[in-house]
Amino acid sequence: MKTGYRPLTLRRILYARVVELRNNGGTYRRIQNIIYAEFGLRLSKSLISYWCRRCHTPFGDGLGKPEKDQRIHKLIPCPELAYVIGASIGDGFTRIDKGHMYVIVLAVKDHDFAETYGKCAATAVGRDKPYIPSWDRHSKRWIVKFKNKALHELVKKPLDIKRVRLYIEFCEESIASFIKGFADSEGSVNTSENHLGQIQLANTNLGIIRYIAELLRKLGIESKIYKRVMKRRFIINGKLRIRRRKIIYVLTIQKKASIIRYRDLIGFSINRKQSVLEMLKDTQQPLI
Image (cartoon, rainbow, N blue to C red; front, side, top):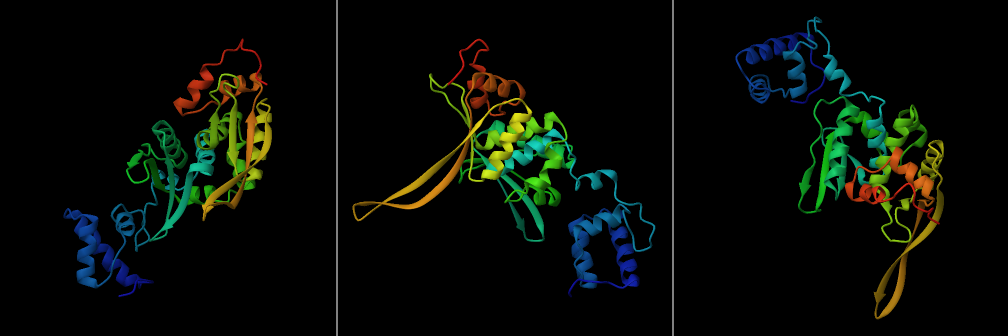
């Protein structure tokens, strides 16, 4: 039988039967199966849950959703949310699974990055426990995956900068967290002796790179933007062919004072990157 609007009388009968089964120790799955066997209707687990907890009822005497259920679907403006937005620009992606499940996924090589992302994402959506990264053998990446429609709409690509400004620029700490998330995902630190500590943030979206530069200026950090053309080369019949050109915009932090300020105000959650910055001394000569 197709699901849809059910008459009030039928809903009240179903409600009474669901509550009876629950009081007798039935699980949500068992209640689903019994209702289907008796009425030919497939009730969702969420509806059964709301009825059993009296969040709402067909008799109009529901208690409403608990505060915990309400905040799980709302975004809390905080530095942790800003970090998730920044990190999702590079290594994150979104998708909609069957049943209208709005999924956000981060896939990265560094466990400390995935762990930080999981903690920040949980805080941003009001979850008490952090999302735990899992290792994917096929992609050889640490995966953090969770469902949240509001966050899905916010971080889906292409990123709407005007929309996310509210969650990023409400305080200096959130600005730093956003840049940190983006740098964990799209940043690198030079380890060569002559350019030790120079920071590069790269992306194909010039608007995002310019926005990062604007935020860095607000924190007193100077940067420059360069355009880099990436060419993909193939050898066909013994001859070199260039098939694809990709333009990448690179934001570089070169001056020693700006690098030190970046390290102290923003930094990286990835230890292998942050450890390079920790090698710099405040008395070091400026990098050119």
